[in-house]
Image 1 (cartoon, helix red, strand yellow):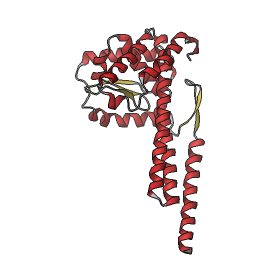
Image 2 (cartoon, one colour):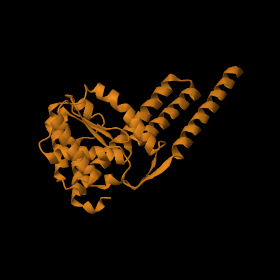
Image 3 (cartoon, helix red, strand yellow):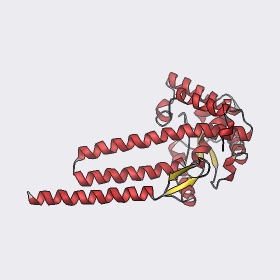
Image 4 (cartoon, one colour):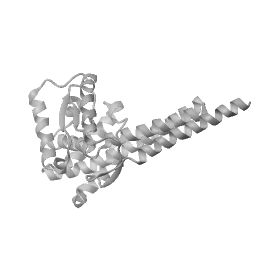
Length: 261
């Protein structure tokens, strides 16, 4: 009995030490982001973030079936993407911007930490105007400049550390599973907040670069229709909030451009 109590006490102490270290590491990594005007908890330097994103590009491109072998389409996306970057607040940021069209029938667009951004041919097929394409790319540019990827990595590391602490301290698989589920919900919620922020600041990028911000509204309406038809929604809507919930936020920033950085 004493041995069992002693073992439980040691596990508790180790678990508390892991939790304390995870919390200290997270909350001591605060960095100010001049784009969002917020202090973020990020453990990566910009150089590390860029390197991490670039290292992930080849495997991700392969996962989606490869880059589109159509120079005309790729050049058009590059032109819109770099027009948005070079004529907005994104130009003042140190990221290694790159745009890639993926030859994929999955409805999606996403960004990696540090600058690589992707849009699938299925997403392009759903868009009707240059302004709608600009809306998608501006949204992804914000993910990069707002450092959402690096922020999620730090949150994931914290969540993993706390889950590990619960596992060690309790020796209970059920408690560990419950803690893991809670941590996933927390990081998912942060991700949804990131999407709203990317919509709003994406409108700012569009305005500064001379695109019609109503293109962002058009994107959300297209996505709403795709969700209703069931096309591609398991991939895209697993991380993106319901388009209907985003339209009002987008319209607010269109009506109040003075809120842009």
